[in-house]
Image 1: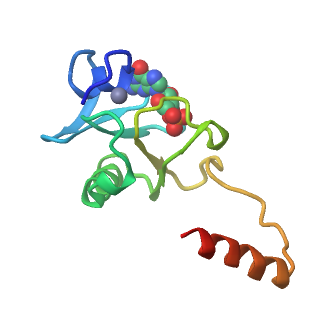
Image 2 (image 1 turned 180 degrees about the horizontal axis):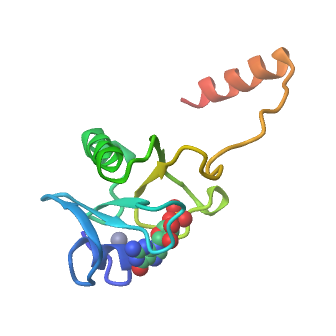
Image 3 (image 1 turned 90 degrees about the horizontal axis):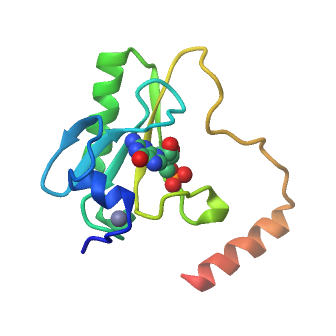
Length: 131
Ligand code: 5GP
Ligand code: ZN
């Protein structure tokens, strides 16, 4: 279940070296080459195309807790991009674990908008109908 052209398959399976902070039978956790903050990590499943339902949330909690202990960050964000429009650039499922430091830059945020309660209700109906 590997894709020979996929960089994350090669990294996850140890064919390309990486700064690994955790590894088990199913996952490798590496440091991002272009970190949003010091210690920014990526959780990579070893199998290509495994999706969010395959992620063991304990790994994310474990890595985030270790970052707080070892790097002194005050918290962390879990970020997972799905599709180009959402900012995904490597199409092998992965979860970002981004340490957040007191007084650090805003990394993942948005300006809260305003919405009419009727439009909220309509939108909720549309999503519910598609579930
Ligand atoms: P995405 O935008 O798909 O959610 O995230 C892809 C992430 O992978 C980016 O943050 C990028 O810096 C990181 N990345 C891309 N190629 C490599 C690589 O070869 N090694 C490592 N360690 N990170 C990479
Ligand atoms: Zn892959």
